[in-house]
Length: 67
Image (cartoon, rainbow, N blue to C red; front, side, top):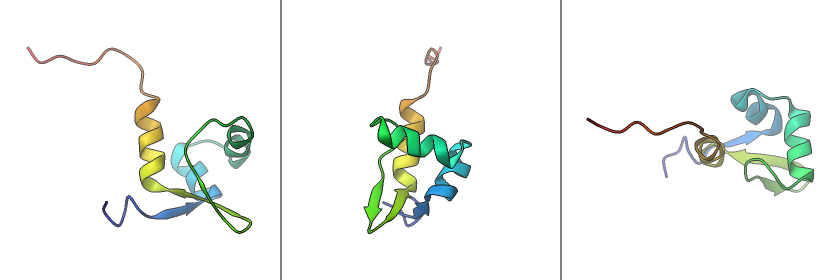
């Protein structure tokens, strides 16, 4: 794991990275959806690697095949 992938982001930073509102992340947590997160006391933190994994899981469309 690189230092960038292990970087912890706040809820606001994670929302900006995913281009959603912080309220969306809150709703996803209530619904047990969205990226993995860590609770540190009262703070919610997201690892960059988890956000990137979440985005990969959300990819849609046909994979390209080499010719």
